[in-house]
Image (cartoon, rainbow, N blue to C red):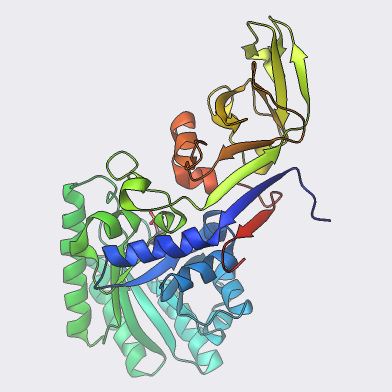
Length: 378
Ligand SMILES: *Cc1c(COP(=O)(O)O)cnc(C)c1O
């Protein structure tokens, strides 16, 4: 049974073309399309394939199961995975030919154990913390990490193929921390090479840096959100200006359409009240589908070619629109967000309305909502 009154329509050609745009932005680097979070809600495997068609040569998956799922689907491109805890099934990661990040000394030890148990040499990307203060070793502890890593390399247990890091404020144009992190990264790379690592890839750039900071592109850039057509810098580098097309359109079939008089409180808590004789229309998607409850009374939705705001609270499975004199009927399509090319709101508009970022809007669309694919690969 795959009937559902709402759907996320994903344009795979947009994903392909967005990657091509990003390649042009970073002509000296390879592109690792980041497909964590179910490809930011777009669907892991179809999105990954579309990104590869656009010229991505690597895929980045935060969680181990995501990386393994790419291989299970038959994708053979290089994959890096980076987020796991002690006791993770690293042997399976190595058996699947997946590159792995070493974010701390304990991880290096577990990678070595997995390599010994499988008889495989682990391809490791050492993570240096250049200032985000999240994963990776600070420069103070970097030499110890390197010493251990090159020992394991000499034993044939690991191969240090990458050094990488992540930026804290690349979305703030010209923020000095970006070049400070670059300097720390350059030093970490220098020390790694001096210690005997033959690095295939040095990588630091997320979408924002891919778009706006060529100096940090190195050998590989790791865009995520931009692959899906949304900009990490909506004010200074809006998607259309960069040439990116939002790939997801979230839509639903209107459920009940009925007349209502003035003074009618709408939805739980009656936080919206009609002020004229009007028409109310229910949209069968709610916070169980990942529609933020914060969208109550603020987020825009397109019906009958026009944008109206959500009326009252978003419920678990539905919300209401006050469509006034628009001509709508049950079964008509409401577009919550899309590419914007037909006058519909974008995920960025939703983020602006709820005080969030476009990343959360698309990533939180739940598994209950079917993904419907469009484009050459669909
Ligand atoms: C999520 C992530 C990215 C991609 O970030 P965007 O801002 O979506 O481009 C790149 N690298 C790492 C380590 C990440 O966690």
